[in-house]
Image 1 (tube, helix red, strand yellow):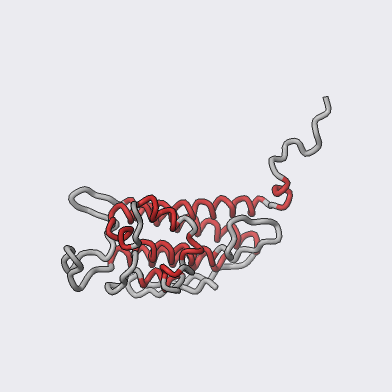
Image 2: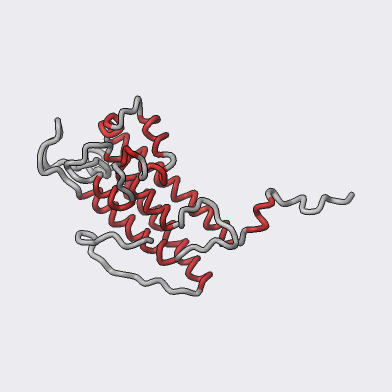
Length: 219
């Protein structure tokens, strides 16, 4: 019996992909999955935020954020994008949905690191430095989320409480946010190393103190 030519190929697209492209697809998918999990965790701990967005429930809020790159350009985001939007969501005077701003800004920054692409082919180039910088920015974002506090009461929340509740040590330890951020950082660092090896380009590493760190450039 003669087998059809190319019968084992699942899609013609696979001819235009290298092993690195397939790995990039996987890492991009996992990065988006991490953002989705972070959004859900934050909304569950901060239900007042999805209510600010006028959503009927948590699922409706997550649906809006499911297309993260578009969120930052929406009217709801006030025209801000990337790390600027992320930081805005952690300000005390931010009037909109803080979770959407934080995760939407983070997603927009990652979208820039992946050159706006969700799938990669032979002619697509990724920048190892951008991916490395994105990983450091995720670390900075995680630190800022964990340390942003109210200086004034907000509704029933007294001064000194987190702008957004995330990790918790009492009454029950909850470090799931820390683990998810760690997973995202590891994902970006791994892909950065793979791309650097492929292109034979070194990555410039900048040491920063998280307490005073500034977000690194992506574009």
